[in-house]
Amino acid sequence: MAPPTCPLKLPLEDELATLKAGFSLGEALIALAVKALFIGLTGDLGAGKTTFCQGVGKALGLAAGEVTSPTFALAHEHQGLVAFSHLDLYRLGDRPENEFLEAGLTDYLDGITLVEWPERLPDSFWPLNRLNLTLTIAPQGRLLVGLGLTPEAQKVWAHLTQRFLLG
Image (cartoon, rainbow, N blue to C red; front, side, top):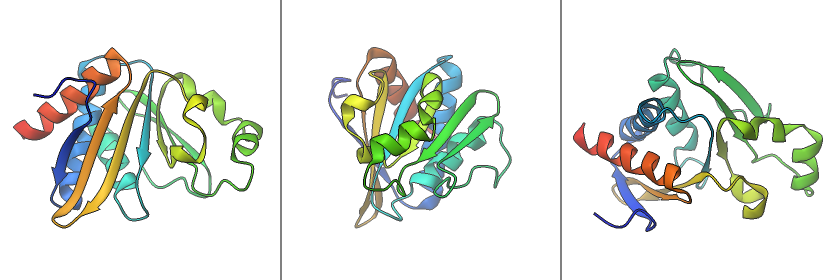
């Protein structure tokens, strides 16, 4: 197994596998009793970011359909077995940092936060305790690449990959 500081890749065959990977993240959050973690989800339109978040919600006890894209609302709060926030920054305009601050979105960064399109703001804007995830469309489905920037985030990624691979 690669050192936890190295990006690890997880092939995802289809949408169901993307849901399963998200479910595995939710299981990791519960098993490791994570209280606060920034999870950045980068990827092109249609790469599966919201589908991944739906898998997280399912693992945390939310009903199917409860986790939807917050593209127009910017943020959704969810209370399952663990509370988490889901942000989508795709629609931020020309001054994304100012818009983020004016919308009061910093309030969501204290707990577990999944953010689609985090690259809209500089890395220095985000909490240090973070797991960066990238979903790309690959010839055989999708590819999920993860990089934990702190020991806790690295443990979450390791747990996610183990749960996903064990089935």
